[in-house]
Image (cartoon, rainbow, N blue to C red; front, side):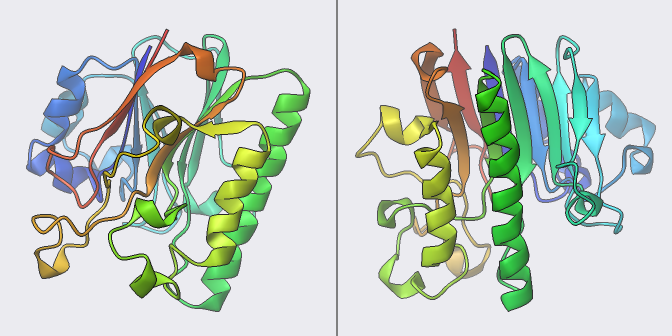
Length: 253
């Protein structure tokens, strides 16, 4: 099974750049997009045809903001939206689907850079998702969480860790929440397979950062430990353009 995740920073902009044609050409079983910033009805007929796959789309209530969409080849056995909590579910940040023998979460985690209130919101979002995952694990479910986590876990996951110790996205309390998922029966699949490899998935549009290799690894596949033996590879496609993030792919048996 092949799953691709990509924060497209606006699906209409990505379609205008023809960026998504690369993703669909890979024939993924699932394509998980974050920050789509639109509702399906806002796409014109040509844009809808370019999507190629059926989808489960969770837009934000606020126009032009957030939103996630999961595109699938075979219809999932189950589709759910949000975290079953009105505190978070108006922002269109989660699509949950049942894929074969696991539950797939497509998640766009909040950004904590707009002040302390949003940082607290982000940390509570992590807590709510982990609570749901803990319950699923207790019931014997296996889980894949993918998307833009908006946090670099370890110093090797960003170019300039020292300079960003007080920047949201690399704060100790944010990094601790990523670690909590790993302490609760999840594995960072890419880092497990490539413990020393340095690659990034996001670059600011400023300062020519991407060309200069100044990036962050913000996009992950967290996989239940029980599912990790099925993971064959994780690929960061940092040569694929079209967004300030690049696509990441997992291949599973």
